[in-house]
Length: 254
Image 1: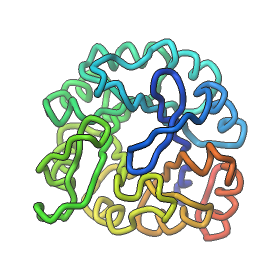
Image 2: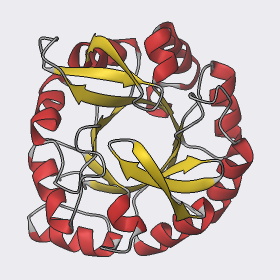
Image 3: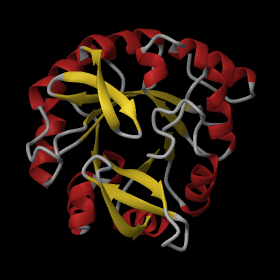
């Protein structure tokens, strides 16, 4: 029996409000995170991803109280990232109601953080969040960035993802900065490249502009697809996306 693909709305949060921009810039207010999470849960979202997009930049921890209130409002898996720097941060997030925790900048600075989290809580808890941009300086043509996309590294994105899987990452959240907020569709080349090397689930992120954009991401090998803008603006609902995906031949949860 085939495994159902997942549709995941993303709540990018800054200073307690959901925000969204283009290519990680010019963030605009989109509403209250708890209210939006509850709406998407009622629409049939398979999971919710909650990212504190300024936590690393502002050098502060994720807002645990907001995570707790969001977890109280929804009864589907909740992934939380942003400002996660230690096993203790993961412990607090799980205690607040998170099911999975995303790591990005801190893991790039200290890769052993992945080992520490995976050893203590298991790979199923750990999501490696990858903010990726194209580059001619690496073998794969992609590099990872840190601090909410603000700092570009010279680290090959595929090589880093492979290392993270070997260290214990249980899932890859593959976000294309180049496609982010453009509504031109997911970066199919990037998704395909990640799928080819990954032994763990791949979540496609960045670029969804319509319900029709999701099936190509799954065709490229994504196990789940994440979007923000089109859901926040009401351009499309979770249910409408699932109808398109099911019509394309993919199993979805209803």
